[in-house]
Length: 451
Image (cartoon, rainbow, N blue to C red; front, side, top):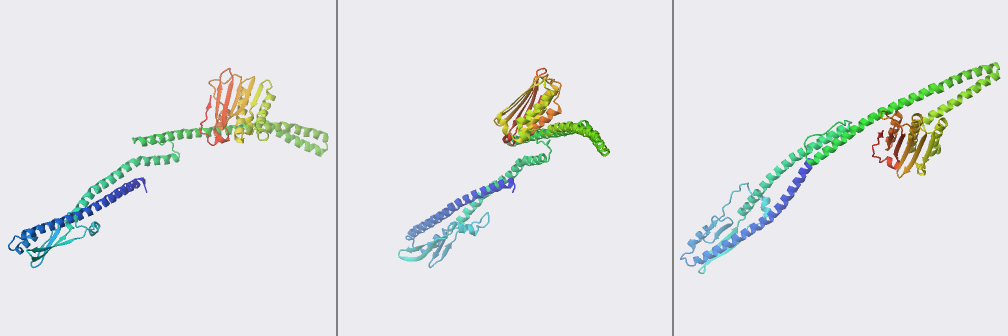
């Protein structure tokens, strides 16, 4: 059932309850009123007859005045008077016509007032002239109560009908914006984040409209950001694949070609019995395999931090520094890893390795630095990663490369943030704040890559 009809049903229930209570009160008052009126009419009628009998004692012929006594009750609304004796006479009450139709039997039974008869003997100067019977007739009084009751129902019925109509129209008008909001939410659920609500509304609904518009705007921004990130991710993936393909082609493929030639030559020489010469070709194959192993190991290191799963975070970072120390021994490397970082989960630890790997590579290759410092510290539920150098820094016109952009996306994916600060001639600093596993589920931060 819709909200509109629920409210109308609630109002109707309240009106019916009030009518029932009002009807019960009116019934008690009406029944008491009719009984009181009947008793009063019977008492007054008896007093009238008794007073008339006293006056008849002075009359020469009382029987001639009995008909007049009975006739005097003609027009009485509540009494039926009959003369029982030598002469018979009846005075019946006038039955009033109901403006709202005949009184229903259920209403008469509800009032519960039955006719009452009282008899007054007529004895004048020792002679019995008969008896006058007084019988109450509550019909007219019940009719009057019924008319008042129906009159009192007309106004509430009209007001109730108008109230229900106004509620129907008002609730319909008030719910129309909610219907529009439901349609707008369906559109947002279908991915149409540019949907907006407008128009003048009540203050409460206006706040709801403004909140919806802000939510839709943020979803539109988030959707655009996700599209941009997906494009960057695809670009990074393609570049990484191209780089791996180039390394395989330039570094591994020549050695494989040489191995193939040496293997063919060694096989031919062995068939000819020239063992000494074949041994030289076998040695050449061994010499070619070693650089291929180093190259493959280097490629695997780019794809997966060497030593992290086997030895932990500290050993993996030391392997990275050792890799560059062998190639650039003139640079001083400093590493500080707090003891609290030993219990990092795999996802956070790998992200730390990726941040250090990219920042360390940039500092060695581009910064022309003499000192590179790597600091990893766990503070509460977060991990701070700082890589600084004393090189020439990044110029203001330069933009972060794809490596830093990719690292920023990795950090953002687990609910962290990455900042890159640089002063020309004063070195560069890469700082990342990563949540631990307990925070990743509830991370609500929107990390950014700053320059």
